[in-house]
Length: 320
Image (cartoon, one colour):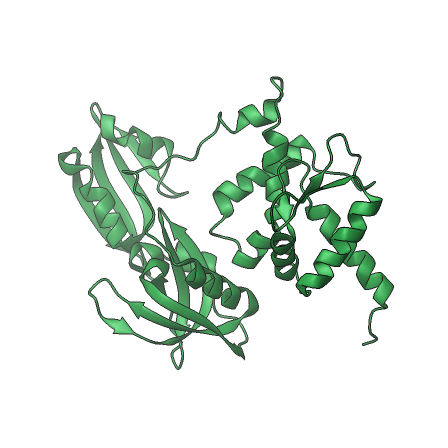
């Protein structure tokens, strides 16, 4: 493949730098260098510094030399590039994505987008009493359906190595300690990442095995993506893995579940069915409910949570 001409490389790098210099708030050359490296543009510190010096001469970029490293931002009222900046709607979308998807995106991607997230926050943080997009952040919230818990601590380096290996289909070496305290150092094939409540799980296959396991990220004391890649198994589907109840400690066995539940406790099951084929018979003070579900420990915990409000529980096996 022919080498890209040097002037074109310089132009592309300059554009990437200009896009990441915030209009509100400031950034530094080391921060910009990390963002560019995570976006696939690794460069030496001196290269970034030299380009920033040039860009400040030809664009309305302010350089604060009062501290080291120097801090950069667009001057107030600067038009910036002729390329469109972030609209308020785009800023709202990016801010919500940063808040809700931070642990479901590769760590390097999140870092490479750092300048855009900062720009989005700055845009929404501008003093403007009529800015409905900023107000929207205070009008919506994701709430828990159970007792809220703080997420367990996940080593940032572990998350980065896991997400990189998952993104690039690389074998992963981990040091793991399960809930019983047993330690293991397997090499695993990362297949999927799932957030269940406050916890993050890696779905993977141990080297030499063809069955899937779930490893809690907070129980990994270390992780290292290897240089060895793999072909993603064609017989694995993360959605099917979830649909089979594997995150609920099931094995995919489907049953026809039926039970009677007091009306006060069962109204939400009528409003939010257990399955598409759920059937409901309304009695004087209760509902008789039948639905096809995956048999799992999570189902047992859910039923037990109703206490005496649930009775006549029956499980009918379904031929596979």
